[in-house]
Amino acid sequence: MSVVILSEAFNPWLLLEEYQQKMSELDGKYGATAVFVGTMRDFNEGDNVSQMFLEHYPGMTEKHLEKICTQATADYGLLESLVVHRVGEINPNDPIVLVAVWTAHRKQAFEACREIMEDLKSRAPFWKKEQLNTGKNRWVEKNTKGY
Amino acid sequence: MGIAVKFFASMRDLMGDDRELDAQMVQQHNIKTVDDIWNYCAEGKERPANVLVAVNMDYVGGSTTVKDGDEVAFFPPVTGG
Image (cartoon, rainbow over all chains, first blue to last red; front, side, top):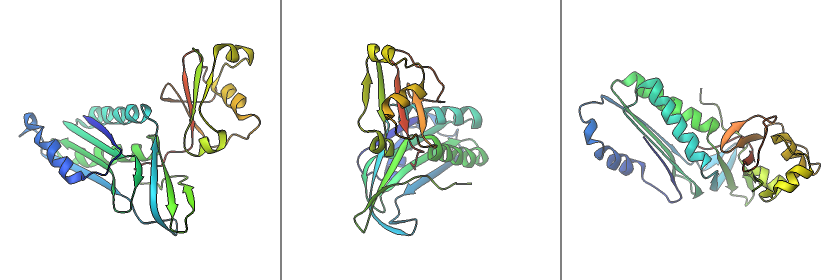
């Protein structure tokens, strides 16, 4: 299980490949890998967005994400999990979040990946401040429901 | 030691910088719960209905009691991912 908060841009696919290469002790044990990547859009609520600042609560954010992954490991029998989340200044098309889980079978992988992502969206302490093309700034007030 | 009070995102815009309430201040103002801390720091500002609270980095309700050495944080609904 690994939780990473990054203040620099990252390539989720490269990171995923590197992470999986370090899991050689699980070779032959997992039959399913489910991956979610969230990317910044250049629009929100009818406005064009030029940049975003992502704030977090150092310490609590990591603690909460670890709690989510521990719970998912218990509920779905995860063999391994990885959560990576950006903070700081983010530009459109930058990846924001990566969630990956490895399980024996696909059902648990799909469900666990979804559950981790939905809990992250609704409970993990991150906050987005958008800069609009008009020059105006605003806090995003709530996430849309995923279900 | 006292109680560290933190505000994040739009709560910081509303409430200002983080605060450190020393033990004497806590006793003098009879601060016993998370709600008491808000009322002391808010100086009359209305508390948004959707504000979330954490004590020592765990979510709690407003009536939760606080003690010397605690870290209390107020923040709006989260919007990560």
